[in-house]
Length: 272
Image (cartoon, rainbow, N blue to C red; front, side):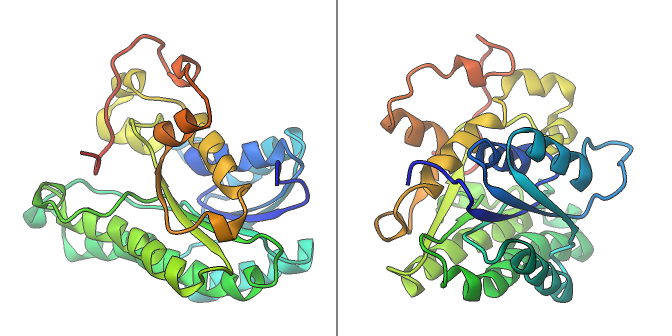
């Protein structure tokens, strides 16, 4: 496969940021994109809604189905998957992008916040995979892509935000397990950025000034596109890093991805 024309992607959290970047890259090929996200009405602090994302996807050359979905709720996921299949005739790709973050220690992470991160990150990924897989197994070249980091048991990745790490590693463990479970049937991979990415979450964590030390979400869109166009049987069980992957494909100039070309970049979490 060289492109994603007529493929149907179910992308969680695709109303903005990395999810939207992956959607727009697929749309340029002429893909169908299901935008499964919560934001139907404009948020006072966050850009974009499922409907503005749909407009961007259509303008880029794709077809869009915006659906209000909170992946914490199984019935909403199940209904959204059925709507997607009814609209486009099946599913080819699931991108588990939706995530919640709180970089706080144990004393400052109440159980309610722990539950939120694990319900969205680990459980949400599992629930979406569970409901999409019966349809993916019927597709010609199916893929699941989780936006999650490589697994490491180094305590330094746990000690300052154990709840968040557990939630993100839950997504990565889904890759580890499902890649083996569905070997030869579905490609299951993870993708993680080498540097911080200029998203609304990054702005909230580091403030607007931190965005200058980030790369644009488009680098993740390009890296995801390569993964999702590979033969699934030969591309599964990998924990890809965006820059490493693109360098192996011949990319040498990463300045176009920089928010501020020439600025020192912030390295992302979970990478040694």
